[in-house]
Amino acid sequence: MKDLYSIGEVSEIMGISVQTMRYYSTIKLLSPKYINPSSGYRYYSVDQFHFIDRIKYLQKIGFSLCEIKSILSKNDIDELIRMLDDKKKEVQSESSRLEDITDSIEWYRNYFAYSELPRANKILTTHLKKRYLVATKVIDGEPKEDFHIRLNRIKNASHLKNLNYMRQFSYILDYDAFLQSRLKPYYLGMFIKDNPDIQSDLILEIPEGEYFCFTARILSNDWNPYECKLFFDKFETTPTLILANEYEDNLYEYSRCVYEVQILIPSK
Image (tube, rainbow, N blue to C red; front, top):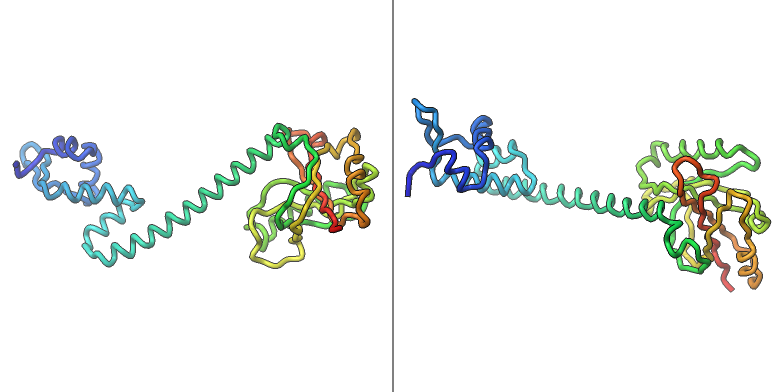
């Protein structure tokens, strides 16, 4: 076995580029065992291979070269264990963040593809869990621009801006007006993904229950609530909650977009 190996040999044996080895030397992370004074050639000893391995696996699990330099120079196992515990928490937090982003991507994909989904053209009853809507009251007769602007202000208020919003406008509507093909909104809101950890009059709890659901282009003039009226005629009490959730199929024009109407079915 040789005592010293050239930088090219180390590169081939350890699977690391010559440029990286030179950089390690520049930042004083791993210096050559010997440098030929006349040629400037760099040589490394076998025991330094272990340091290269450590650098590689520590870098692979997320440590920076600066952190690795500190770990190797201190040679303190207790400190390394503490740093590994901290790195694990950091990675777990990042994993949760990426999982949340993945879920959001899937939600938005289904949102924009809603009109193509089998459910989009069906009338059905379904059980929906409790949800939370950040909402503003709609003043009767006010321009829609006013309550849309007000909702944006609410969403960006200091105590609400960090909630995880799902960008879908939702109306809470007057049931009697709806049966006459008229829209009389009580609230305009936007659902949040998770249960809120704050209390606010601006966060409405949408109850769990059985909902009668169907789709309609309720901003246009060519829809009919007949099926809805037919379904609820058999109940003695009027529904207390009717939601209309927007599904965009155009990024510029929304008057023809589909809404899923969800009506809480009264207990018999």
